[in-house]
Length: 477
Ligand code: 5CA
Ligand code: ZN
Image (cartoon, rainbow, N blue to C red; front, side):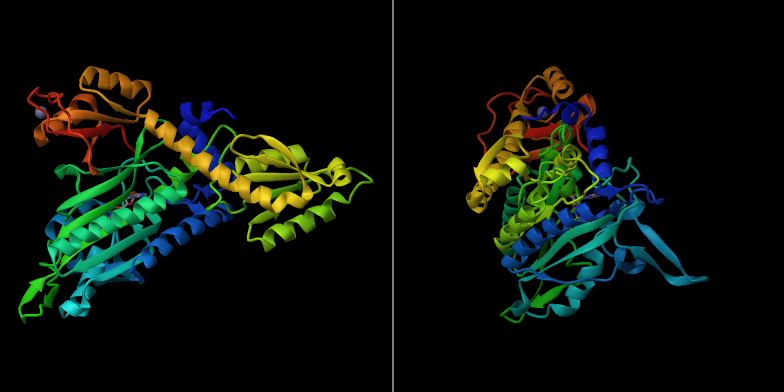
């Protein structure tokens, strides 16, 4: 097994190195908080988008595309929403040399651009539920330190869903569906997560409550990788989104929204990596197999056999790259494709040609096998499945090792400095106690478990009255 020392101990360096060297994402563009998706990174991004798009469409969401600009009076309609986003909005105030009559915001998210149109589209109960999504760029003037993909000012793959329903019950069912969609999505990518109900002081501005997916990065810090919000009628009222019920009366709709960004790609790259670079699950790997011919002078026939194999594998729906580069040594090619995380490497040298064999190397363990050339399709398909399963397991095990329970706040501090991760603490349920804990040990409260758990039996770690629930805390991005 390749080491994971650099990966965990110098994670930030590891992350910057892999995205720069592969390259996946170039951060040298002269606007802070932006970056360029390089071809290999773009291919991964495309795969991730395909998966979420398919999941949303499968469950009745229709894809749309709204304009990037929002007039000022629209973005100001829901008071709490704009109050929180005020400091993060980029404004367009000029058209050429003329000052605009109505300032235009670059969307920081799209509630206030989408809901005025919901108001026009929704007339009666037969128009409900309405479930749409879009995959767009949004802009947030982030003031905390920006980080490639993780905290950017132009989010370039914001996948946001917005739904409207006739009743509160329907909208709450939709919250469950949103969560199911994200669960499937993260499971396909092999990204482990916990789901928490965010505390009241950290919910999405304008929402009644927010539910979040968090994962743990190799440095032990937590990353929020997706959120599902119950909006109640908080937007329906200011945007006047009403429908006629069967009995002829009118009611405001009930709404939800949920979104994910390129943080998911940062998590995908990170949770499966090791000191050699990326290790990609086959579902998102731009190439699932790389073929490397080992050509000696006078024995050039390896290349033609490699081409044949590439063709056969492609006919079997595998994504394959044949590295024909003549100036580069096989060793340097191994290094390059290991860095890029291609799940399987195929090597073919003079001996293999003689014996009609090929050498397979799996990226996760770097184990080598020699197999008969006739069996290559079956063997590769089997191996890809095995790699995917073991990647998910490894990520899950590492994640579970970084979830702790502790009721002594001093020990919580120790755990945080030793290994980080998420710590579940018995809590009395009072906001003041949650915020106290945040301040005392300089952490973020992630919230309470969304899924059923046995309740703690002890006392609140902060105030010693009987605990009613667990509260999750972590150092976070
Ligand atoms: N309108 C809702 C649902 S789409 C919304 O904007 N929710 S959000 O603010 O929580 O953003 C959705 C997800 O985008 C977050 O869970 C987080 O994973 C990601 N995200 C938020 N801000 C950034 C940022 N500056 N850079 C990268 N990803 C971000
Ligand atoms: Zn308490």
